[in-house]
Image (cartoon, rainbow, N blue to C red):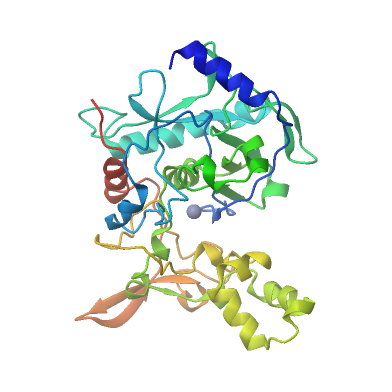
Amino acid sequence: MATWTRIVALLLLWLPLVFSYSWTPISSDQSFPLPEVRSPDILPDPDDGAQAAFGNASSALDSRSLTSFVSDGSVQPWPIRGILRKRNRIRYCFATAEMKEKIGCRLSEAIALWDEALGGGAGKVSGHNLAFSEARFGGIPQLCFKDFYYTYWNGKRNKLVANDVLAVYLKDEASSGGVSSATAGYIPKERVSADQLRGFRHQLTIAENAPSAVIAHEIGHVMGLMHEHKRPDRDDFVDFRCKKLKGFGSAMITAHAKPENSDLTLEDIGHLLCTDRAFADQNQFEASQFIRITDNEDSHTEFDFDSIMMYGSGSFALDSCHENALDQCPLVKIKKENGVKVDEEYIHRSLRPSEGDAAFVKKYYPWNE
Ligand SMILES: [Zn+2]
């Protein structure tokens, strides 16, 4: 379709809409030395017949376990986009000019960490086809919103930015609690509600003090990677002790106080908090970032402790967790000899994407001449 035809079609599509916006984070993350960061994702563009570059995303299940490209197609790799139809392009916009000013550089640094791991930007040599760029109209970078209301964390959408663009937000320490978040992978428009289509369905929220490595982790979610420590076979490699997660006690109290849980014993509640993602989320408990994935996920690759998507022992941990007090940590590495556990070790978080992370990107976003 000619560029102008697309632009007109795009404008017509937007005219009748009321531009409100709401969103739900998909996954959240704790940052490294300091607090925590959560993770979900987005890009602009109407769904104008974007090609699914990798064919059926559901066939992607033979990948390393990092994949979040689930079997029902609700999450896919980012499609090939742009006038030339060449690159899998993740376009992003900053919610406000102030956020852009504060976070722009660190976002670029995080993208550079990925480029380094990948052996450069999209190209024949690096072997991948993924590119990031700020959403533009007429060559001019665009913000996500015309007006943004911090009180409601919402705004009047900039109609020059398509609704599948990744909206980038910055949250201060008080409102983020040190937690960054991002949506995972590309969400086809058929998979979201009409209300969600009025806003941005792909989102990246960065906590004020999040280091570049944490932002790189969130970008991993945006690309479609999931937590390494959630893979189906993780119990062979790590020990997860849910009750050592920060907030377990208060989540027990919250859940126990709810009338709908009156039939549940404390033991039931503890079990649900640690095994049921929805139940954990309903009670503001971060266990959902650790609960093992059991459905339709496969892993043919070695467990990757160096993955940028791997939590450390200190993630969402109590202050009492440290290298000399491993029993206080929610996640530790299991050391085995001849298949038998002999010891455990503290897990340090990776500061950059691993070779395995890069392999994932090259598999799902292969170079397109
Ligand atoms: Zn994460």
